[in-house]
Length: 283
Image (tube, rainbow, N blue to C red):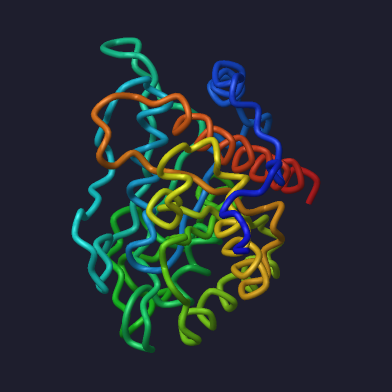
């Protein structure tokens, strides 16, 4: 008899009824370090992993309505849609009282197969240190050099990356070896700088029919559990630092379960990034 696609009990607990509490936690966060206005998370991953869509989804959750801050390509392509280094801020309030949440995301050109395609690993290291200027256009053939216009020679603590988030599609059959090599390189550089790392698995509904039927099956799905364990083994990010999310895509209205998974990942981004900011103060 074939094993059921669902486990009897979820292998990770998620409090589905605490959306408001999680949202409040995120909305009230503020870095303690006076030199840092924004906790900066850098998203990286393979082309089509859903980095820009995740940024849009976070914006939806924080503002309580559908929004469109980061251009996301609806076409599945093997070429990166994001070409330049851009900081995505999330608006708080409207009109004259408008401010921004103190958490920002930087989305960079996707990792692609091959030496001369996708973002160069050295450019990601420059981003870690705050050396990439806003709007810099990535060139996969030649990484950013200190005498280039897009290079920031005097980064502030605010320009630096405080948490690295690897975004991976659960619907990708297999990551090939050259992409894995690039991902490992990026992670090793982040580790050298002490930057905390975590991962998000997107497209979980497309990867598993049981999750598509009911998002609450996310931690009961055998298929997703295996995907997360395999990814952890391949890239070296512990399973307890990997978070499945479903981005807003075909929905036209807000959805409680979608919000809760996004907030669960967002809380950890804040916690990990804030730990790094605290550490920076004592350096």
